[in-house]
View 1 (cartoon, rainbow, N blue to C red):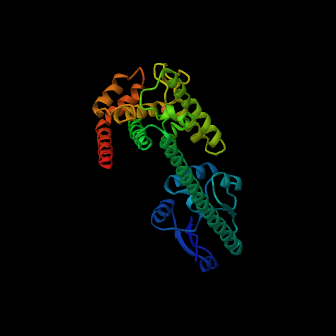
View 2 (cartoon, helix red, strand yellow):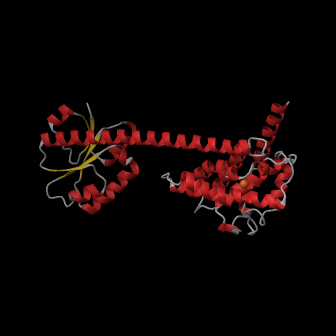
View 3 (cartoon, rainbow, N blue to C red):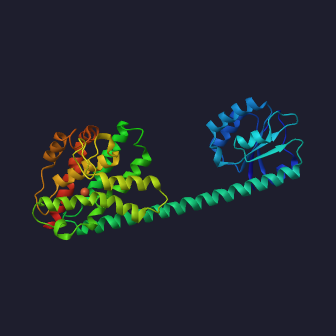
Length: 352
Ligand SMILES: [Fe+2]
């Protein structure tokens, strides 16, 4: 049997037949209603509206502060002569509006209709959330598969994608904690940036093997060709993922791929963007990418001590890197050093 919260005025009793069809709980004030709603669940609320519309509007604002308005349908009951209109009620988010005098049969029918409709909506909301989760999981798997595919062709010693993701996550979380760039760095931006980080070098897919897998430093010509991977990466993301509905993610993934080699002083590539012209996600990716490149072995160079790598990044704060991001990295250098040491030890063990 469905449960109804009956928020009455003037101690009005629920009609007997209503009590026969529903488990009715009566309260005589809004405060009592909020207390009960804190502890118990109801399938609908019948709320008497007895004051003028300005007072009732204020009252409903208080209701919304106390009760999650979308979790239970609220049905307004308007006494004869009330200045509150049906339009007011629907505008305030009520599910239904009844006018006195009430016919018990009509109340029961409307209650049944509202509760059924609300439960169906809730079910379809849950289905939609589940479906969105499935799509997000699939998208996550595709992103990491693509990233691993790129890494398998690359001259890195493996693990670069995962480690740079970790650095982006650590630095991004610190910036969030410090409240830096609040207009850009929302939690959603942070999530999208972390999901975009594994694809930062996707453009390398179009770079020839002899450049990617070379065991010596690149010649000037080879380096020029390698530089194309940034702009190509942005283009590949637009072409392969351009049809996904998540425009915010698409923009961040494109920015990360295209601009992670830009430098704060404008001497980077592909566009020579300067300072905050470079998208924030790409500035964070730049620190993560260089940190990993310095601290880990490549086919053409040995690994550097992590403290030394951090020092190089600090030295290039304000020239190569955004000083705010470098400061955030410094604030968590212990955590970064710990992660790098763990990762190096793991690599050494697997090589033994
Ligand atoms: Fe790159």
